[in-house]
Image (cartoon, rainbow, N blue to C red; front, side):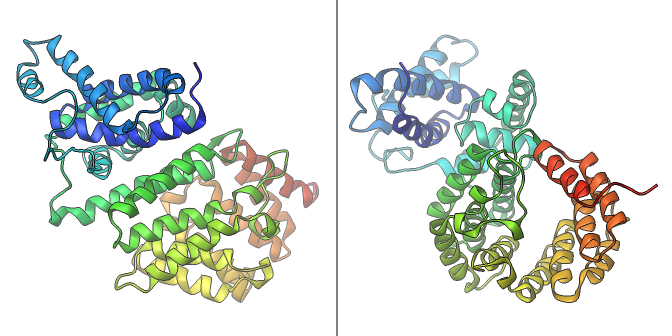
Length: 414
């Protein structure tokens, strides 16, 4: 029986919470995840016909706990310690005072565990999407254009690495929390970016990934309500995602920011994101996500492209470049500088990136250079840069856009 959308959403929300409870109780990440997945499958098969239980989270905890205990009992010799712990636990539901009881949401702890520093960024992202985001291995594999078996192996290795690192199911100690939080936010940022502008493939967007990153950022804010960078990241996602409906033509071709129909931007997301970042910017500390969100808010609140306060955008990029230097920040500052001081000024700033190995072979550098050369009236050089950028990108939607920009400048002269 097909699960209705409301039940799917509920199960996706509850699955990481239930997994957090089981990992806290039993400490076996992979076995607990298997048990939760079996419980979710059982719920998806029975709830549409029989109705959602009064306590769906408790139902899932009970079902997953029983499945975990069955797994432990099936391998007594190898799982003796886990069997003893499981036998001492009431399988009907959490006991009074159980730290994994019905009022406890362990999802943030689970998110930190998935973003363990022993893992590579790719493994952190994959494990987060699998365990916290509730995506299937096949869905994650499709998102990153790798075979399902490859992604399954990557996720399995990640779980084993977390286990080998001897991680405990708890938030990092206060001295490590700030550093680990940066990793968590970076993983969510990567997930959102891949959803908003897919790095390869036919489609420009992966809305499911973008929505999942926003959902997890909302969760992070609910559990860490006083952190300005959590607010900043959520605001950045909301403000950026507000433009999604206007970014492509009906045929899927890319529409650049200054040509988008701003009436199609999501006013609700803009209002929410603007309110979030306005409050966050008034806090005692200023971080890179807050600054990026402030830039996004400046764009979002301009009624027309020509109304954009480019002086403010450039000033914010200058601050961002100082506190979090990165070639992509410099690249974006060049665009803002060109708007305030002319395209030649932007091109001079871009020249500083020519020798940066992090930008070698990156299509964005050539795309921005082409755009500024076109503004400066150097059509031949702009055409060449658009064509080079088109050859370098792995996104078919971006390639079509870049090729069309080059073609608009006419054929190359002999």
